[in-house]
Length: 422
Ligand SMILES: *Cc1c(COP(=O)(O)O)cnc(C)c1O
Figure 1 (cartoon, protein in one colour):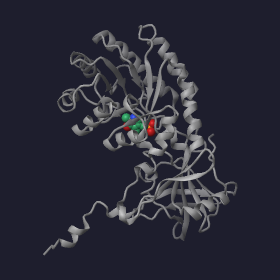
Figure 2 (cartoon, rainbow, N blue to C red):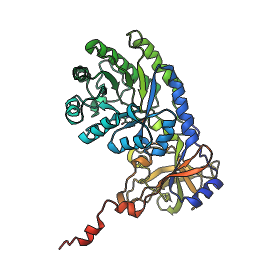
Figure 3 (cartoon, rainbow, N blue to C red):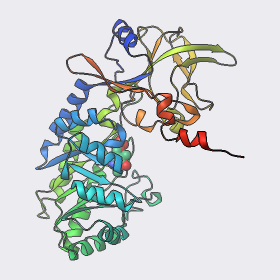
Figure 4 (tube, rainbow, N blue to C red):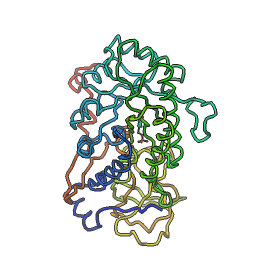
């Protein structure tokens, strides 16, 4: 069971909406900090631990500043994400640059900022050398593919575009060593929204075994391994959250079995979690503006999939509650929909909910990661802003809503006036 709560009462929310009209995202700073501390505490069983928050999950520098203040670094995959981490004061090796199909100028920026470059392919060694130079510390991303005697739970990495094969990664470390690299790290990322503990522990085992093989075959002693992201959250009330302490203890057990006897202790443990860090602590706050009875009953919101596309994209479940009606019986069956001209613009399909009146505040839960971040402007839809509920209970805007001027900002309207299509 996971409890689905919203931090404001209906009266508090009504007062907030009088200042900041819906739709907007609301993030809970105290809950994010509490969660970050629980993660750090659980992983303190390792001699050295660092969490690089996956910026793509919630690319807002205010949030990054809070996480940096809790000791987190950042995981970036593009030039703007590198700039966001920099804006939030996350510097140097606290930044992991895990990119793929990387343009030269992005490698150059990562080098300039001193981020840990995590190479996605053997051919990128030469690409990096020619375009940005080889740094002293470098990481390589491993794709375990159809692991020999592998475990059934690790889906199908062999169909994923990421990382080096096992043979390539051995070769890669040899080449990097020959080019003067002195500090090395190993990374993988093979999960997404995975709530199964064993899956994550098995990932650690695979990396630890590979760390020993790398030492044996190349004499490279790794400084740290990065276990990637992909820890799931309980989107459904009946789902159970993954317990950090059990996870860290499980990984530590494998560490003690493999790393210590091989003489590789201390080995740094890094992770790059996104979803589980902020996901449960963000809500998309909307207002019901229409009710429609045709072949089904529809509730139309003042938001749409431009603000949160996970339901439309993946058929993902997001819990929905109605402010002030938390304990009302769910007597109705609705499709809760947005305004985009796409029939899959539905936040919920045939969902049992209490009767919803026009003007009700409809809360979409667990939207704090891969939420607004995935938004887009198709159909001329403008993305909503973001508010932060601070630990002292004040609420501040951390991103305004988009305006039509933002939508037109990439057009040269003076050139349009001069443009004569005849
Ligand atoms: C998306 C991503 C993450 C974060 O994934 P979560 O599922 O949000 O934890 C971490 N690392 C890489 C390389 C990613 O692409």
